[in-house]
Length: 145
Image (cartoon, rainbow, N blue to C red; front, side, top):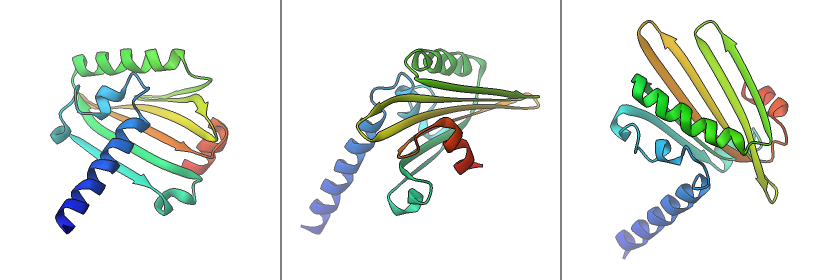
């Protein structure tokens, strides 16, 4: 009985997490369809763990990308950029960051961050999806720095 309850809870959480990003073009990246899960660092947090940042949900993935993977991720991010209501882009040497404020749903503000970092011949990509009460990119940047 306990095993069945735990399994039901885990499936429910997995469904909730999948729904959080289902409207994004980059969701296949988070789902491991572009880069296998075994080749990425995947961090998820929700609830009290991130409430001090006024966030309700946080999901990040980081991986070393091939040129083909980079091109695919760039294309998907650009599609999401078209629906963004706010954009901030910065470039510093070999590092680039792009923060997209996505359309708000109810009281939930949504953000997608896309970071690329060139380390020698290795390209590291980080994608972060966040939901919460943070009302602007400026406010978000203050909280995460």
